[in-house]
Image 1 (spheres, rainbow, N blue to C red):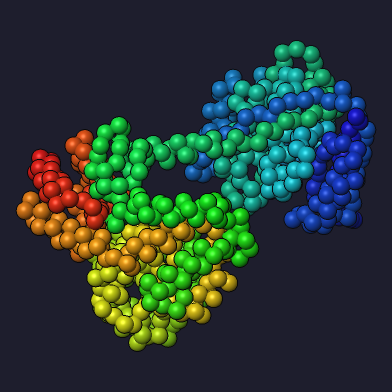
Image 2: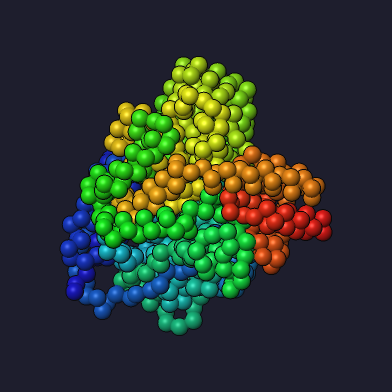
Length: 633
Ligand SMILES: *Cc1c(COP(=O)(O)O)cnc(C)c1O
């Protein structure tokens, strides 16, 4: 395929002067000629030096064999404080390529100012070798290889053109180097280039505003004659392969991230449990007492729940085949929602695919950028993420501090928005001051939203959660919860007025754009809710265990007190918490160490989660074991 050399020279020609505006070179394929020519004309008309009134475009066909292909010189940059330091740097680089006596060189460089071409200087005799000293020598017929569909970038263009020229010159016979300072008064960066040095940018080689600049090709005769050099510079067609700067290995960032986590004792791993979720599980072939699971009522492995759910699977199948608004709503989904509304005493309910997904969907649907969300500093990550997705202003108040909340709400009086809190804080086990929170929400006409992940099935005489605990008839506007904790299954939900549910069905993106959960999963929650409403025996056992475990910990001098199934034992140091957890596992107790970012740095803790089916003896034993280990560290 033939290539074409395009040369453009643009100037302003009038009676007084003949002012050079712009010059450029391209070597392009036939189909690019017209586009590249237009680009060059555009450049001549829109040059900062002025609009050209004389544009000379020369187009020559050339055979690919006539073109010398070169790899671009490697580029580096030397930062200097001022032009003096820059010029000293040039002298040092010159010494490296064997040009001593180089102070003289900088004098000669000054002579090059206002010359259109370069000086061709014999470094042994310091004689100028250009046949026409007024014009100098021009290196022409060169371009870089462009990638297909590559966009031209003006700023990068100038740099690439300089690099292409320097590369061509560096490979000229008898040329040992080049020095260049731009004559553009705003451009003070210059360069030194040679095969040995590469293309070395020096950030300051003259003062701002100076029009001095020029180019010297350094000639040292080795073979051939000076006209070979001049011929190469002026006639040899050269295509330069400029490599894209190599980006950092995309995986290195990940590896570094993981390394950092390990170093900070924040690296996470998964433990594989080899049996059903129950009070006793098999881990590494050993029987272990599970004290870390949110399966508080032990419904996850309840025979009645499993029978019902698996039976539903036989009838309704496994997958729902679509989102809730397409094919994913079965009789089972509707039944569960009816049961949830009854259980929480609200008009309606809506199931989501998980508690996480419920929180992000609800909050981002209810709030937008003109709203304010007041959020407890210890709220669950899914609430935090929902707040962020909503783009509302997020005001974080001190943990369960209703005075701080009210003060912050007052500062935003008149704003629309939402107060949101966990009912039971997932890593601390304490209970929100709901009566006060509701009072503030009412008084300032804000929505109230409570996340019942750890209160459903745990709080209240019949396990109905936070409202039953406080014996409130008034309910938060948005009562959110999860099916994955005390109910032992999977999924999230929201209970509230019919209009809230209608709104969320239409607006909550995490509800709309995801395939609904399997009827089997939904059925397991129906069965768990049935068990819970028919008999509060498991709730009572859990609450009795909570009472008992407080006494066990007190007896060991461990200051943790809790009204819920969650008992945090603060250790502080991340590594220490991990070690204690590992030791407990060796002794047959599965207790998670909770670290940043789940809790704040330096507040790493053991998080004990009680189940209704732990025996009193197991609770006493583990308290004693923890007391013993903690005394030892
Ligand atoms: C576990 C939890 C969630 C998330 O529920 P999943 O069903 O596990 O996604 C939301 N909020 C709180 C407070 C939780 O503890």
